[in-house]
Image (cartoon, rainbow, N blue to C red):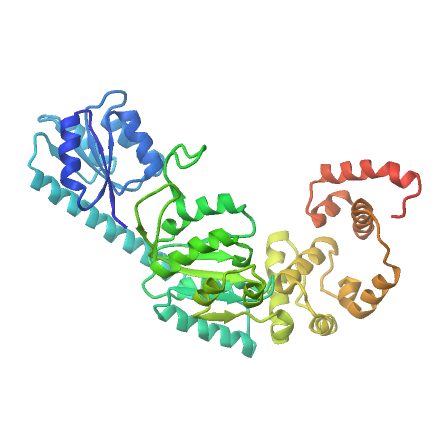
Length: 457
């Protein structure tokens, strides 16, 4: 992807001549005054700004000062008139790379630009290397001692050492697919960019397209400026597409072209841009079956599935239940100010028998709920929900008494049982339910008439 240079100068002739000289190798932007230059710096984040010292509306030094305060990290070269040494010195103190006095030779400007961009490249690479060293263990977030997880670890390292452009991670919801994607990124040799994540199920398809590919100014009604997409944001790193099975067929077609050609266009754009990121997709669906049913493009499935990594469900790695449970106990001890001891053998035996349909996420939520509500020194059998202690009996009991009823009645019954569980403490009940205390009060108030006339709750 070509680097971008912003020329901020009120002399049209200078902007034109510099732009013509630089367009062969760079994406060139132009602004004729200080406010316009500052706006483009904030919106486009160019790699280099050629900034005139004397500008209408906002002086060049003020543009530089405000840009730095706003977090702009690109290189800046000040263009000053003869004798404006004081302005040049102040600009250097504010982080300008260099300055050049007008009039100047084009070759001298080219050399300064070349050195400035190379300096930025080296500084960026050094910073990213330091960040990578600080997180050199790809499995820093993992807890797993089972043979199945050791297989996953070994495959992650192989993928990281390979040139694989695309990886598909399969596994049930809550099994840890996001952690595996991040581990692949950390294990990737030479990765200089970030890991950028997006959940394809959480964003409408019309918005998802713009989020992934970005858009040009005027591409649609609300596109008031150019926006870089997540594919560009992941340059040099990893783009993680979670729940890719939820992506619409039209967007699947665009993604297929990206994977085949390693190029893309912003929405409303005409320029082909290079994809310089590894694309990791994850799904809890059987994509081959979805393709057979017409819900997923077969050609996209085969393109994605060149390298497949299966994440085992928690019930398939029961050896990891004890270390995972103790890991979550330690974590919530710190966060909640508790001092709960590691899980005992009786409770552990029950946890290892349970099927864990929600996998690690369900175990984490269970431990958090117990530490929030029980206030005990040890996680014991009586702290476990009946559905975990007696999963078969609970299922039979629910099936025996099932009857169709309105959703509002089911919700109210759940709220009342949670209040019973918390001993009537509404604040704790609201936290367990994942709603605010005010929302809980409103739901109880709305349900009061139904309870008064004898609705079963």
